Image (cartoon, rainbow, N blue to C red; front, side, top):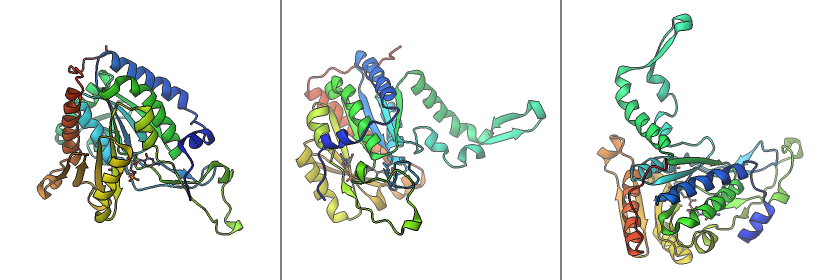
Length: 322
Ligand code: PMT
């Protein structure tokens, strides 16, 4: 099934209800950091949904938990970037990702004394919690991170375009790091039933259509001078590098981070028009809890700096906007 154009997609799908609020937040954040000559990275994270009903009870989803995006956002902050963290609602977020599940509660002790009940951090957990809490507090006190969230693939595209509108003013000092797992398939709005599908009507026949690739207008029209890094996920090793190269040739952006579903947490390949660089964690590093995102971000930051030097951009270390 042929995909509609990106213009048609925006014409048919309405913006999400919180769109104007998020636009204002994005505008304020970008203007503030632009004024101080800071670099801003938009990190997209988590999977998009495709609703099967307008009053959505059921939807098509994907595997992404936002591990890559949430970890990467923390490393970009460490490298002095201001971060727009655009994530799937309820997926992992920077800093709190370290305490998902019951981990946080396991770190706490409670002394029940009626109205004087106290909760304390267990002594052996302070060493774990304190450095993360300090980095979290510092990032928020400096106004260095903005969280905006999406759920459906259409919400994602509206938000992505709004962020691009603001980032365009930063030229090459803006980076887009598109780690979200974006659906390639959707059901056009006019084919989606209003109410919950009824099992009494028998098994539904659902035809998915192709979502237009937004990388094309993004690179050519929305942020033509930004440093754009896309991601390529495959499950077949033989397709991975050829498809990453194809994307670079087609969209003419700076880099594709190629990864396989099965090994994505310990192996990625950075593919640029000039080179191919494999990053692999050793078994010891995996056991020690090293994030591969630390290496990915360090290398991309280095390449971005080289690019800015080449473009003759002066970029001083970020200053607090306050
Ligand atoms: O969250 P984790 O569990 O840590 O997993 C991380 C990850 C595997 C999701 C991440 O590393 C990753 O690979 N993300 C991209 C997955 C993906 O959407 O790949 P793709 O080959 O379908 O798309 C390639 C690129 O095209 C993406 O950068 C996407 O932003 C873009 N795209 C996709 C669909 C679409 N309609 N328009 C687009 O522009």
